[in-house]
Length: 121
Image (tube, rainbow, N blue to C red; front, side):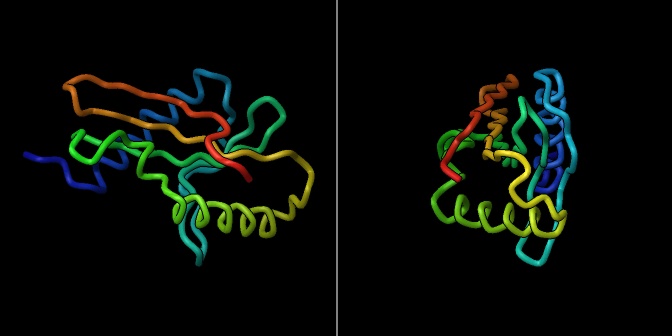
């Protein structure tokens, strides 16, 4: 039976969060939702507040997972981060960055790639 998109996303997020924790990320939030959309994970790492976008693919037909974080998605993530900072009243307390975790299941084996500071804030 073929795994649905939601199930694939959930699987990818679970694998990514385990991967991040092993690398010293302290996960503060998962699936933060607001009227603007959703942030997959918010974490602390090396003094940074990190907004993490997780992309999972089971096929390489559309390129690697990280290619799905295009200009439109980056702009949306920036707006979501500002909303998060405002809602949590964090202001300018910590430097922030955006990381991408690419989970690739297309070659019959698991590949997880972390792209720290994937794009400008």
